[in-house]
Length: 181
Image (cartoon, rainbow, N blue to C red; front, side, top):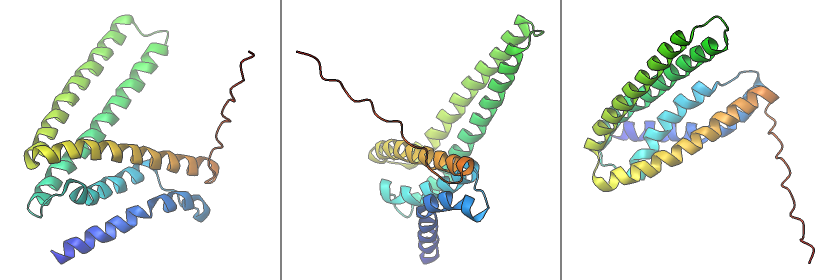
């Protein structure tokens, strides 16, 4: 039990430092990819979930066993979707592709979407079976917060890789003109 707490603490510290690592990478010459940020962040979610959801020590291993497949499922299904969309885009922009071929590919895309939704729904069912109704509600809000944070970190990683770590300047906010009376 102490080992597990120490591992979670170490992982929490590592991910807490992640924003600094993301910004510092170009200066050291080693890039951290958005995919790496996502994997580190998935581990961070596991660590933070126990506290945020008030998981018991008995629930935590079952929660991990249900959350990890959900995370992986989401990642692989989204990757499949992006690949199918890219292929559809290529087909649509080629002049030699028939409408029937494009329609067939769109059907594959729709089928993949339906299959993904069903698989993700089933994975949520596994996760929900571990949680009480109150924890399920907390998890939905927790998940939303974590998704926002992950997007921020991924954007930071992309920005750091693309411009040497400098932040993009914000566009000036338009000033309101006073209406003439």
